[in-house]
Amino acid sequence: MEHRKILLVLADGIGDRPSRRLDGMTPLQAAQTPNIDEVMHGATCGLLYPIAPGVTPGSDTSHLSLFGYNPYEFYRGRGPFEAVGAGIDVRPGDVAFRGNFATVDSDLTVTDRRAGRTLDEAGKLAAFLSSELKLEGVEVIIRQTTEHRFAVVLRGKGLSDAVSDTDPHAPGEKLLASHPTATSADARRTAEIVNQITAIAHERLDEHELNQLRRSRGLPKANAILLRGAGSVSTLPSFPSKYGLSGFCVTGTAMIRGFARMAGLTAPLLEGATGDSKTDVGVKAKAAIRALRANEFVYVHFKATDAAGHDRNPELKVEMVQKLDHLVGLLLNELGDDVILCVSGDHSTPVDLGEHSADPVPILIRAPDVYPEGSRFTERSCAFGGFGRLKGEYLMPILLNHSNRITKYGE
Ligand code: ZN
Ligand code: ZN
Image (tube, rainbow, N blue to C red; front, side, top):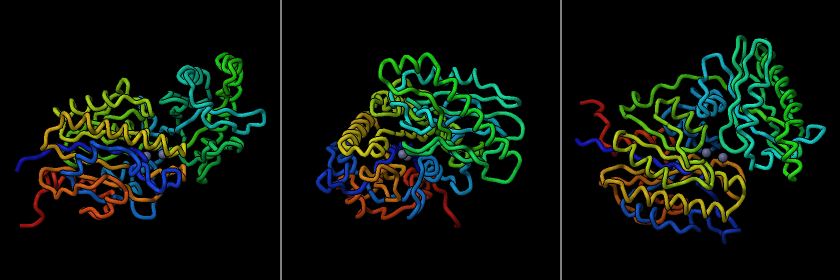
């Protein structure tokens, strides 16, 4: 039997709920998606619970689940994914966090969790902090990822990832002190270190010349760091050996790149794939098509739909769905008919909620020999599709089946 190649496209946070601001439609219903509609004429569809009904996934736990790694077994915090994706060589014993540059006022109340979001200085500020934060017995590595985001790695003896976030997760709240979440001396020490670097970072950033310059231009200072998602590396069984597929990942998002690398997929930095609404889908399509020549499995991640959901911006989410459609169109132009194409999402991020939800996401699988359903790719029409309702852990087995790679169980 001929083995087929697999192209998986996941749009982050694509699922939604009907919104009054879109006349009772979801962004997928309101958008013009001629290319995905065309794919639907050769595809079977359904709804996908990325982890399970009633579980609201993070992008990290969802990706683990969809690629066949039980998140309840393998998830050790988001920090390590972000740090590996940022190009830091994370080692066993290290503790990694995700971080944001933020704006705080004089009593440490967070006034902007993203320091205005447009922060061209972020790379320089991260490098400055990396050289500035010298503590006894622990190395602090900080590297910017995208926009105002960065990864932090603490390296040294006696560290623990059992510490709480300093990110209050909402503006108007005070910067939090990190607390140990376990009773060990390592956890207590690590929480103290986190609080120390948070205090030093605030002091040095507040007086930094780039922040003085921002203030003079009327921009919010990036004068604090917010840390979250403490984690240490857990070894993921290699995706290529688990499935017998060589794999490649196309993404502009550090966290996803880190996940992919930890799973043993090739995940290079791609110039122009930015992980935001300005991402160059031409670059992504070209990289995916090229990768399909040498790999059995190619994963394309599209982030901007999630960000529009978090921004509670229905028009932007519609626009980003249309951008995804454009990406699918570019892929279709070059894609052989025998390649399995799957389009879905890693969770829903409803625009009226501004956060992830446990709603299932639509999924389609195009293959030469599935029943074509010919409807639109929306939450509503996929609810009537042939795949019914799937859990994330079934995604890879189903894709492997359609690529003729499942061996018989029994005689
Ligand atoms: Zn996500
Ligand atoms: Zn999100």
